[in-house]
Amino acid sequence: MPLYKQQQGCSNNPTLVFLHGFLGNSSDWNETINLLNNDFHCISIDLPGHGASVTTASSLQDGFNHCHGLIKDALSDLNVQQYSLIGYSLGGRIALDYARTQNDDRLKTLLLESSHTGLNDEQTKERRFMQDHSWAKKFATQSIIESLYEWYDQDIFSDLSDGKKEMIISKRADNYGVSLANMLLATSLGKQTDALPYLQQTELTVHYCFGGKDKKFKNVSAQLNNLKHINVVEFEKAGHNIHQHDAQHFAQFILQNLR
Image 1 (cartoon, rainbow, N blue to C red):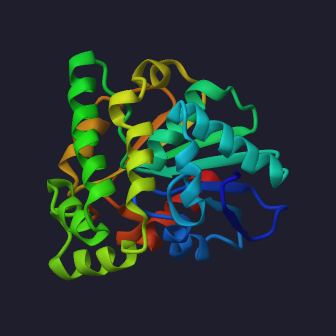
Image 2 (spheres, one colour):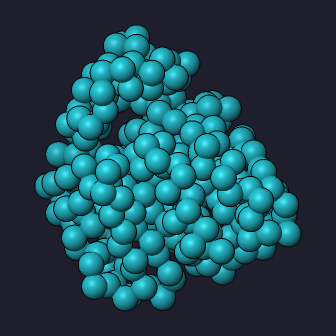
Image 3 (spheres, helix red, strand yellow):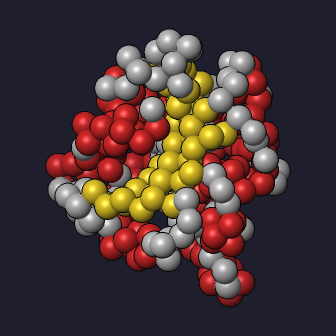
């Protein structure tokens, strides 16, 4: 089953492809895209298990490779010739692994927002997979509201006010827990190949963006400093989700660097 995608802006403009994070969907990018669609052709995709691609997660086999194939098919359906790939969190991990494995000549620039580059220790990977397995069990067996409250109680979301968390949970409440569980296991950080060796040698232009209030990904970004072709950028006032905290500055960054 193909992935759902939506597009805005003139197809003659440079193309941007957006991949959302876990629990999100293509509409998460709307505020950013609305600031860009006069200058770019913007395509946002619902990843498997999310939004209008909710049933796609039930057929995931080899999680990352399956996602890559579905993304390639979506871009071919739209006859995309060249594009920049922008991914947030889970979407960024999928985008990075796509760049690492697919040798897609159409891909010209990669923009990663608050995305892990992968773990390099097998024991750490196993521990992470077991953590994700525990979360997947919760999403598959609890009410979606109960799972969302637990999810957004994690330290990585500590910059969010209680009111902001309530708003996000209300927005995410139409997700389907079993599909989320399938996607979480299929694309666990514990199953992701460490991409640091790729980033050390790639000639693809890569922008890595993180929020100044996001201590975890500030640490991840440190290993990318001074790497050739990697532009590491801190958005000082933002937390984990930069583009929803400050779409204006995020869109401005894209205009300055991807046009």
